[in-house]
Image (cartoon, rainbow, N blue to C red; front, side, top):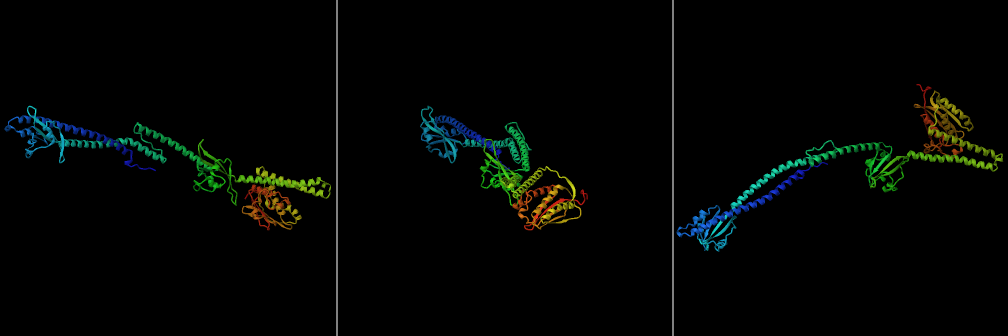
Length: 602
């Protein structure tokens, strides 16, 4: 998400603050040092000047005191010699009495004592010194200089000086104000220059930031402008090179992702991927179809829950699962079995990053495998029964029954019947083998179904008379031509009619019907037998399936006739099905394409 950086948090502001602070600190250091040195120098110059005037004045006072009293003019001498602004000089005699002053305003203090310590030290022949005093906020220096006699051996008085230094301090303050003004101006100029300088540094950085944000949204079309060849410029060039490489890498990644998505989407196997915790992060379209879920529903759910492995496996068990796992999702309506194989997502010598499960629909494979096992078991059983019977009878014949004229023929007849039964079974198996391998060809020819059906029924009526079974025919008289393999369809009808006769009671009726059903001819063969239970009607076309196994073996069936019939009918683009109600008989229906004209014209 793009976030605008405020000015006070930007690099530009930080650079300005840094430069301004540096200037302020530098100017403060310079200003303090300069101000102190200037003030000290001005005060020293002031002191020197005042001291020189005092020396001159002391000499003049000594000479003036040497004159007769009526000729002395100390006040005039003080005013003429010590004519400094904001300063006054007074002559104090040995009794600390003020005798004269350079300031006319001091007329009221003439004749008064000055008990200042500086005056007393001067009268004791000590060198004077400047002492800073303050009176009502005004700063001034005081100084006392002893006045000696002309011989210089004795002190005859002292000169007391008061000199205001406010002018010096005012001058220093004025200079400081000028310095402060110059500092502020320099700071403003520096700030402007820093802003301009900062732009040269921050502009490429801001440009790179904008480009980084665009790159975050997948836009690699823009480039950072290179303004210089310094480190910032080299950084900008490196950023542009990085943008190009990222663009190429992103394009390659997108192509690989699209290719991978296309492969996953069109795979015939389901693929489920998890993260390192075993939670689902990917399901391809086929996996969604096989599992009956969507990625949105299963996202971040445990793989064991998605595959419904229950408590049989944990995610850690699946990491080490080398064999495939069968997942039974069958319902009452239809079987559905999945085979799941697992492989670990792991870098070389690295931690496990996830798990990939590949799902195969093995329903048909398991069904075929189950049919194969059942087929082998059925064939084994069907062959074992007659072989066991033959073995028993042959052993009896070998043990002496062969010499018995009454038992021997009966035993030999049973052996012959069982042999024929095995031959029929083997022939049916060979036929099914050819059908499965499609190693047969249909010899098609145009046949009038009405006449064809009459011929088939005619062959069975002789046998039906012996069993006291009656045929009823409902066959349309108008021609109905079908393009069929006569031998194969004859075998289909023979099988159905034989079953109808086998399972019909004595004196029962078998009804054969031929009529139109939309654009196909429908043949139906109905008996009056026990019928077929509802749950068994879907299975009678399966190989070796018998509704009543005991009775089927008694009448000599192999359980393959209807399976063969179904294959042949489907090979003619027809259909076959059963309708039956228990204890009310069974009807087998066969439909075949037909035409009202031989050759299919019209």
